[in-house]
Length: 156
Image (tube, rainbow, N blue to C red):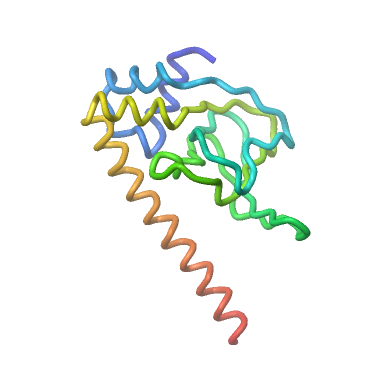
């Protein structure tokens, strides 16, 4: 993938859309391009998280797949969307699995590299963390609505 295309993908994501061209170039320097094939697992529930991912091409499904139970699809993400971003907030284990639905390309950003970039350039860190907080609130709101629908369906 050409650098101009990668930069355009970064610019189109909610996490990096507040960054100027120089800041985007700095983020681009720590990105790793990753070609994936349909069915490929990107990470698994409970694995240690070490990176966030941006979908450049293709689709990725986010799953809960506990042992001895069928997987439950939580969402399907497409180009320009980010997943695995909680690794920026805490070092820990993945709360879900991610698997490619179709062949595609991802931009992988190692969490430690992005944290170092945010420390070296506090303006970048502030803008990214502000966006991340807003996105995580949206995800929490959506999860609460889904739980409410489940509970209402059981009680109705």
